[in-house]
Length: 139
Image 1 (cartoon, rainbow, N blue to C red):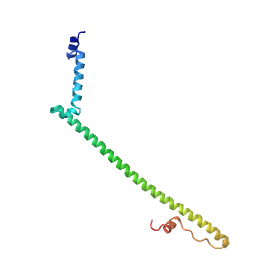
Image 2 (image 1 turned 180 degrees about the horizontal axis):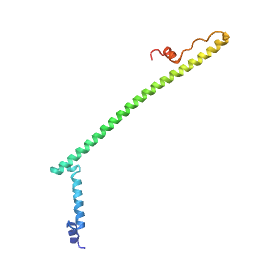
Image 3 (image 1 turned 135 degrees about the vertical axis):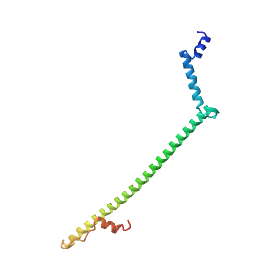
Image 4 (image 1 turned 90 degrees about the vertical axis):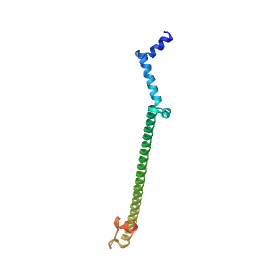
């Protein structure tokens, strides 16, 4: 084929090669028109490109706001869980202290029973809530 014949084939919109070449030219023109550089153009293509850029920027801002809200919720949950964990640790420490109190009480009770020959009633023992109020009156 001669170069003139090839050129005519790609220029003729009725031929398959011509149709494809026009379609590619249209796609390239549209994508170029909607690029960042096209936003500087005046007219319809420039306006469309600017509108697309504004839409993309709003979408980015919405994503950033969504991420900020998600992070704030995670921090709030972390603080709540940390507070609950501290509360559980304190409760566990008090329970452990009460267990030590009971062990000491029973040891003293055994010595008392030996000394007294178990003739008298043992001294009264506090329940856990009673003991806790006595040991930790403020909390």
